[in-house]
Image (cartoon, rainbow, N blue to C red; front, side):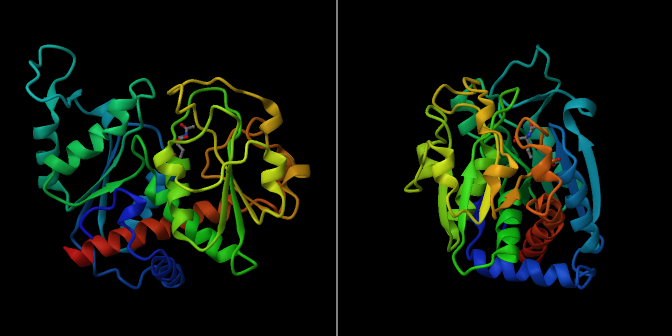
Length: 312
Ligand SMILES: CCC[C@H](NC(C)=O)C(=O)O
Ligand SMILES: NC(=O)OP(=O)(O)O
C-alpha cells in the first residue's frame, strides 16, 4: 500500500482489525521500522484527536513527526493550473507539495470541504493535488469526502466491543448548529459495508448521504424504528447532500437520549456538542464507548503508517 486516502485502500478489513489489536497489545514492538523517518502532518483545519493520535502512532514506530497548521502558518496555496498568481495565493501546490516531500518520508493531510462547491469537494482537489505533486506516500487525516483513519478506528472498536457474531450497527444523523462535512459518515458507512454487520442508516428526509456512499444500505427515516435491537448506535451530524452544504433541519427530536439508546453502545468520532447531538446522561454512562473509540485512533494510524513503511 503506497497511500492511505480511502477506506477502499483496505484490502481485508478483518485482518487489518486483528493486526491493529496486536499493535495495541505491543505498541512499541516496531520501533526500528520508522527510525530516522519523518512524518509531516499538515492541517488546513482544526484537530485534537487526529493531531495527537497520529503523532503518537508515528512515535510508536520510531518516526519523527513534524506538524504544521497550513492555514494559519504557511503561505496561501494556489491549487489552480495555469493561474496568474496575482491574488491572495503566494505559493503553488506544485512547489509546496514537492518541497514538503524533501523533508518528509510520509505526508498526512487534513483539508475539509468547502460545503459550497459540490463539484470541487467531490474532486478532492487538495488531497489529489498532494497525491499528484508530492513524491512520498500520502495519508488522509480527513478530506472533503472521507475520514478513513476514523473509519478504520470505528471498525476496530466495534470488533472489540461486539457481543454477538453479527451485531446491528445504526448510523444516525443528529442535529447541529452549523453545516458539517459528510466525510466521517461516508467513511463509517464504507467501513461497515466491508464488515459482517447488520448495517442501517437513519436520517431525516432530505438528508440522505451520497447515493455512491449509501449503495444498498437501508435508509430508515424513522429513528425509533431504526434503533430497534441496535447493538451500536453511531451518531454524526452532516449537512444536506442534496441541498449541498445546507442546514435545513435542526430538529432536537433527533438528539440521542438515554431512553433511545437502550442496551446499545453509543459511538461518536468526537468532538461532540453535548445536549445538542447527545444528552449528558448518555455520554456520562456505560452506554458510551467514545473514549475507548478515541484511544483506538492511535492504533488505526499506527497500522496505516506501519503498512506504508513496510511497503517503502
Ligand atoms: C472529526 C470531525 C471533524 C468535523 N467536525 C466538526 C465539528 O467540524 C466533521 O464533522 O467532519
Ligand atoms: N475524530 C477526529 O478526527 O477528531 P479531531 O477532529 O479532533 O481530530
